[in-house]
Image 1 (cartoon, rainbow, N blue to C red):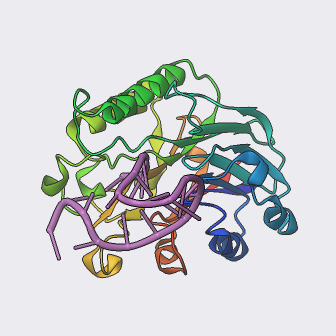
Image 2 (spheres, rainbow, N blue to C red):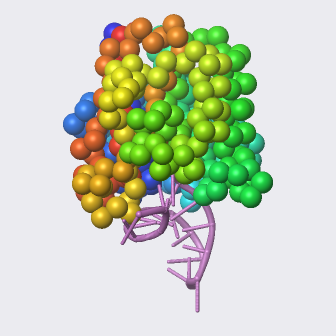
Amino acid sequence: MSITIASWNINSVRFRLDIVERFLRETGTDVLCLQETKVMDEAFPHAAFEAMGYKHRLLNGQRMHHGVAIISRLPLAEARRHDWQDNGEARHIGARLPGGLLLENVYVPAGGDLPDREANPKFGQKLDFLARMTRWSEALREPTLIVGDFNIAPLECDVWNHKALLDVVSHTPIEVETLARFQDSHDWADLGRRFVPAPERLYTWWSYRAANWKASDRGRRLDHIWASPELAPQARAFHVLEDARNWGKPSDHIPQIVTLDL
DNA sequence: ATGGCTGGTAGAACCAGA
């Protein structure tokens, strides 16, 4: 059986419901993991997804900020919510798919402006979030796909200008090292780079502030789909939908989609 | 030219994103 799983930081699922529907209609994705839904669970727009046949949904939302959701045509079981930030923010939800595969949908904190744990507590929270993810990952014993907005662009070719971004939160050496420790803790396979090897250009985010995101092309690869080592060989395809950055009222992130043979 | 924008919420000389 072949299934497609996508991940997209949507920056308000209510405000962008039109383009979420367009994405599902045009791609036929089986399971969609959303980040930054920005909606409490009781106000989630269930009806639109129900009408499109996505009858299985797991939510971890909160008021105003953050929030994650899994929208699926396939049954979802065993919702788990890790609080890897240890402050109650809604940044993770996990599910078990038919056949047993674990799917983890995560929204790593952005980390504020200054890459300094003393001057900027949010930066420390980001590093601590990743350290808690790493401890979870070390104990993991089942085939798992972890997807989402990691808010780190690890490789030099994951940003438009490596040297210019060395002090910019999302690409600093300490973040890259901290993410590498997470990756090493379970030998996670970075599926984006399996299918689009470095140094090929591959971005998933462009700032809203550029007058013309495509012309300036100051992108970063902040979003990721990583597979545990026993699952990685079952990945058949990986795509990002860069066209979605041009859709009406776009998110500043684009969707990424993986095809798995299960 | 890394903030020039954006959404949610309040009703901001706001917060957060990254």
